[in-house]
Image (tube, rainbow, N blue to C red; front, side, top):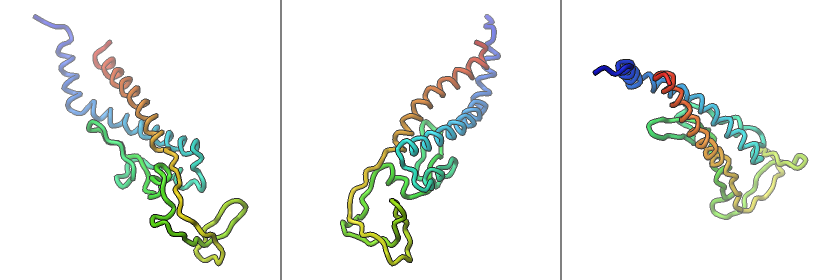
Length: 165
């Protein structure tokens, strides 16, 4: 008995198992990482978490030292920032760990305080809880929805291309 296309199917499955599919998915995953970076920046802007722009511009892809990483089912996407305070903006934090008041040197310029370690003026900070805005959590939730849909499309495209639907 002969099955039309069986040899072609087996050849394409062998190619997929030998890394062809994995290489394509790794390239696609890098593209998805760039989309995650866009979503993170959009969430930071939406949550009004942009002051100096340092956090906004700090997110990068492909650095194992990042504070945020995503890893699922053998695929790892290294997207995040090395700024320690990124998690405080997301999760919230106390302004003082022991509840004491502390002096912060600097000056007021309009409605904004500018830190200056050499200033003779400043402000006294009392301990308080600063709520996080959840920018990372929101971005990951949106990304996971987009990722699942995109993964399905990518797999279907590969099947269609290699198995001639």
